[in-house]
Image 1: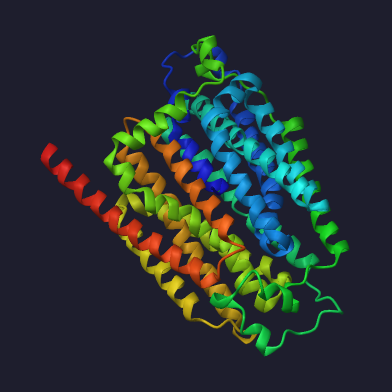
Image 2: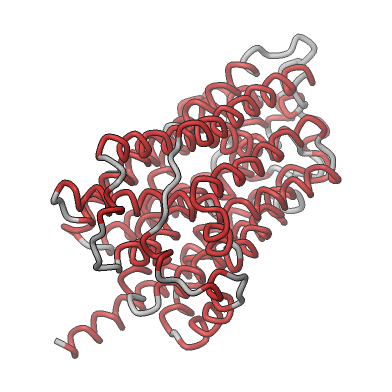
Length: 476
């Protein structure tokens, strides 16, 4: 699951309700002034900006930078496997134990460990680091979400604004800052790798013929000079810059973020602060009892597969293979910018036109792009097409991420925690599967798998809409 997906999921997991449900108004709630609250929102946003400037960009490079024995994508698969476990058990316990500030700070150390492991990228170091960052991801985003929501509640009380309005404004500012991490991180990697190594020759036409949908990860990487690992000193420079950004993020949180006590902590019994399998049990019970949840499985899994494809396969099979690893960052900047703009825009337009037009748009954009990528023979002379396909993928991803979360929130209002836990589980399953087969299947096979999940997911989503509309009509 991408961090954006985790973020939106945690918002649906009841954190907002948990901090806004206490009707009592005590003076200690408002001890933090409006100026201090706004300062903390800025601190959180820029802390995450520095951290994910490093992590997201390093993830984009894994399939090309650590391609031997499937190390890069295999490590990412482990990350999402550990994330599933973490989501089911750790967030509430760790936030309750350490508080929001120190949960964020300690979780950031997990990310720094992963970045440091890339200095000596072998299975022994990367597997352990991937587990660590996967376990730290869920508490990190849960604590951040809880912190912003609680401070928004306090700010609303002081200003007289509605809580929903302030919460949306705080998270809107956070995402505005956070989404630029794709730009800065990829700009760093592309700048460092920008100069083509002198000992690397231009790939031949025969080698370029093996790029794109016909790319075979078990053979093609042996011959194509574009896929050669950059000089080790440049790899060290990139990893060093990324670690420095992660350390800056840690220092920002530790030095500038104020500690808070959540309203809900005053009423939580001590036994509810312990590790518990309650969410895990509720997750599978909800899946078993809900027809909607079963029907949405393929589309939810596709949301993980499509993100894994753009990160692990498009970057390697098309960009690195044809243009070289030094161009990955530039193309992914285009993807990130379009994704961020469309996420912001679509999230506000949905209240006027509903979910269906956007899901149709995602089906057409991603379906058309998948078919085009199956047919297209990538060529260095067609540089603009690499950016166009990345932009189209970002547009479709914006719909998938925002609208599936919104759809879950609409359909499962009575059991949001269990429903969004299913969302996390199924999307992470898509990531795990896609990264697992990344180094063994032709790219064309991966495209067919993604297209099959997209088509079946949209068909079953249509059934969900028909059933839900008929049910609402009867109730009306």
